[in-house]
Image (cartoon, rainbow, N blue to C red; front, top):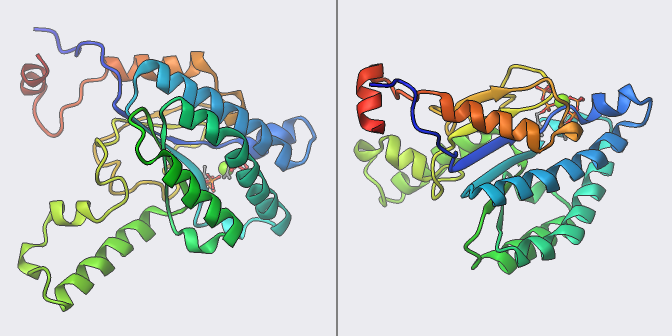
Length: 247
Ligand code: IPE
Ligand code: IPE
Ligand code: MG
């Protein structure tokens, strides 16, 4: 019996798109040039995932900690966010993508919030790739929000605290209605999660590459997918049990 599972495509891919700043610095250009180049890589990555039949793609666009960057970079990122939404949403909608945002939207300008809501409304009924943009997202914030919600429901008598388990908790976290994250990719060479999906990555396969995000291309994504298809996911079981389940 082979311990190598059959080739499989991840149903849900999550990506920490890192390295835009260094890409620009290597070219002696302002960091924002790197972010703009990163937007191109986003388009190619979405394309790749649609072609491969991936069901959900979650992209880490802006973390709850990224507000601490120089004002000029933050406002440049906000402008870029708006122009990408303007430019890309119609085409993505046409291709059947359903676009959603996770993270605390209230922190964004009314302009951006309006655009985010319009994008979600426009694509809500689509049945192709679910594209999730994590904007002002933090994994700890996500967990704290679920805890607050459970506490409120318990206070109001809508849930019995004795019944709070992993399912009740998970149901109140971001991405609850999507397949579990199978593969999490981080570009830019650092080996860390940086407060991305802490709860949701529990059994995701992690894949790291030194490639800087603006250089992300189909060959690198294919390498990640190939590597994923060769991994044995055991979920705590023995290798023999896992291969019986996968057979
Ligand atoms: C990722 O690239 C994009 C955002 C965090 C918004 P960085 O801007 O973090 O690029 P590096 O890590 O400084 O190279
Ligand atoms: C993670 O990258 C956040 C995004 C890609 C949006 P960072 O550049 O913020 O992460 P650290 O600071 O290197 O951990
Ligand atoms: Mg970075």
